[in-house]
Image (cartoon, rainbow, N blue to C red; front, top):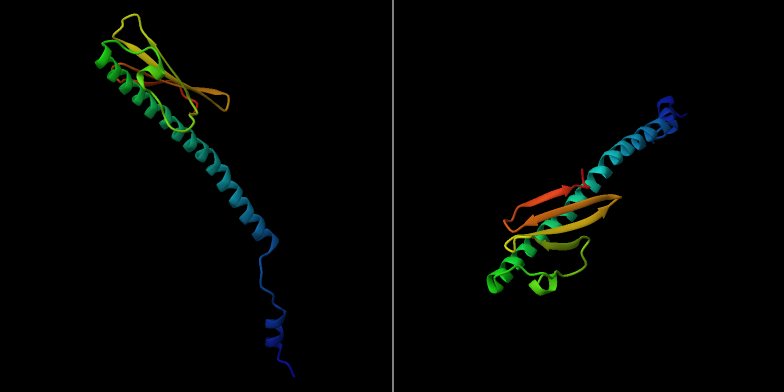
Length: 133
């Protein structure tokens, strides 16, 4: 004869209930809703580093050109500004009315928002419109 305690052990199945699974899915959904915006912000800021680095390089190229020719260059190729790969920003600069000053710009459209950085001959880097905020 089979004892009653053995029957209770056999009939008990192990597993998760539907409510437990729904709670886990809800928790994962909440974590994803928090993580995705932070991740996209991180990606945006990483791309901004490209603009900052390239503007600093552009300023260095301008200063080297000025040291040799006593004026700032008027063309990116002329001053030797190149970078490897493809850039997500477009770069331009303007020689100001005073030939000893210039302003360089980098511009990019991120999700419909403009992201623009500038640097001048003094090395002051500024963000005129930030798409990562």
